[in-house]
Figure 1 (cartoon, rainbow, N blue to C red):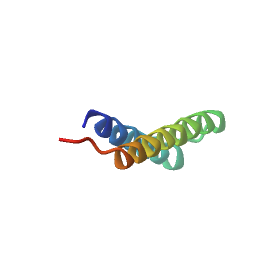
Figure 2 (figure 1 turned 90 degrees about the vertical axis):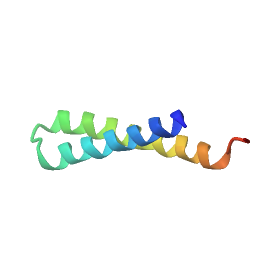
Figure 3 (figure 1 turned 90 degrees about the horizontal axis):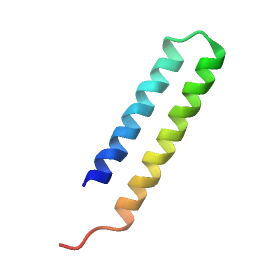
Length: 59
């Protein structure tokens, strides 16, 4: 359960950073760094979500 919350948190942070990069920032190096961090967080969230779906726990 906690891994799924972490995954959703990573995806939410990625969404917030992407919004910030696309709409609020004008500095190109900072946009690149924050965009890269956002895509890394999105990838981590995606991989952990796949792990959760593929390996359900037995009750």
